[in-house]
Length: 273
Image 1 (cartoon, rainbow, N blue to C red):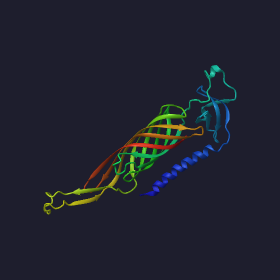
Image 2 (cartoon, one colour):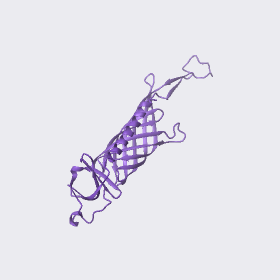
Image 3 (spheres, rainbow, N blue to C red):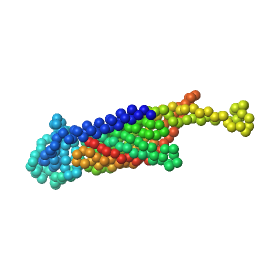
């Protein structure tokens, strides 16, 4: 097993979490006010600019969001007129999705208990970009301990059902599994007695054993989950879904073997925006 590849992935995920944590701890105080946006909306809550003044974090009630500072027209301590603000300005406002967010999770691919691997462990991390409304696209990688150890490289498409702190979502993951260690699969060839003239009935049929080479394969994983963020931009993620992947092996004399997996994926993880 190429353990150094797994260690690099784990270190990379730890660096992402640490960097984002350090970023949000640079400043110590939020200010309160009414934030006017150029699109005409007004939010009431506490706010904090990033050190370079390019971003602004707004908290209200249990919700939190980070936006480009260029979207803000002005900030005032005075409540806006009712005809400008609408019926009311609520502390628990609807959250505009952050442009970038990360989901890192671990889980099991649950199958038949009679399988040689009834519930292999999987680990993954993905960075998402909100490109339109509640739609986000992302790229991810991970480590999966199947018959061999694989590194999945994937693309993701997510749709959040709500623009709130806690929201259900649908996600479609598609990609390719890359093997990072030698195959554990073997191919057994059996030669019947009517082919081998050296066999005297009822003697045993001759067999041969050939090691196969893991080539990787495609994966598809639609999931339904729940994503929950706190006011500081950290969150919790849980999801269940259907996992299909096809692993290909090759052997001597142009021999190829495809093994299909149909599993229930169950994952828990953390999220950062």
